[in-house]
Image (cartoon, one colour):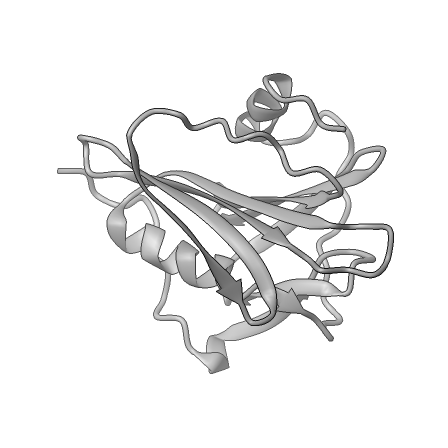
Length: 170
């Protein structure tokens, strides 16, 4: 049995802060203790959310969601709504009791950018996956004042770099 390398505190309003995706009018709720960094591309932003230096959730914000990359061990697919925003999620389960998820949220945005938020996590324990799911499900319109600092190109996490090497981002 795997032991979690980090633990999310129980998510409660007192522990959350609103987080805005830069220039988008949309954001999510982060529990205290998570840090965020942003890497900007030509027409997208890539966010990494970490606890104690370990990335637990990533998000692409732009006009074309990244193609789905996790193809093995699909447990189930759902579609629904986060408030008035349509979403599609795929959850993956593995024999070693870890989970991965990716969710694409269509922003129903009248502005030219962004049209989508694509969020994902890799290889989390069930408890940590549940906590990350709560963050994902908080995506919506934002009045937040806190955003992630931009980071220099080349300093993305290895996970994000690998993902982007295998994907065509338009």
